[in-house]
Image (tube, rainbow, N blue to C red; front, side, top):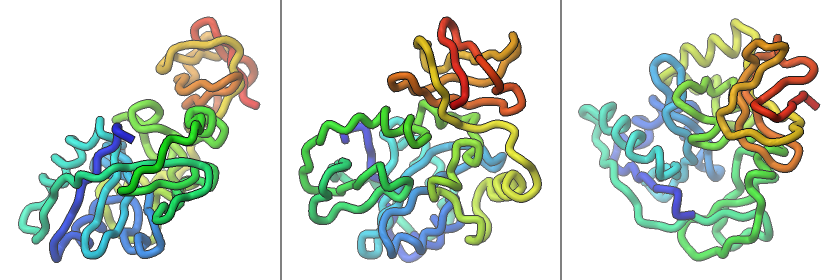
Length: 243
């Protein structure tokens, strides 16, 4: 996976530093990969990543497109913490077939198979877009954007947030959305007749109802306003409906 970057945190304060910043519990790395995110203080998405414990080091597996921003934010928060932030030169592989030795299960959903750090596992032909659409899995830079609230993107279902771990950046907003409000928008699967570009506005009865994202066959992912997502909807020349 040449589109991934590994950011490594080392030093006495690495674990506590990361624990105070991200949405999931770093201590869960004792059991394998942890899926998590870094948010703005306003609770919006900056980057999502997997966290791997390798000895005393913590390794963040992040989309290459978002690695510079993530590294910059980590450096900004570092202040006097006793740790080093560096890039690790190591390959990342993934697949859905038999897992090679050393591979770790993807914590988001069993259908997403495994991830391997180091080694050389060949691509197994998995249609990742089809899998993501089937199981409503958002992708960095497509469904996950700077305007995303991660609960609307399904992070609780994807094991990407821990509501018992204590404070982190953006925690107050995430907790309020969890406990004090009912989600009025969210990422869902829709049926689609036709096709439209990613990012196309969805309308229902002439009113804005959401945004169309990844498409696979006659299904797609869409971020919808639930109170308008009834009956047939339109995205450019495509027709949509909720299953």
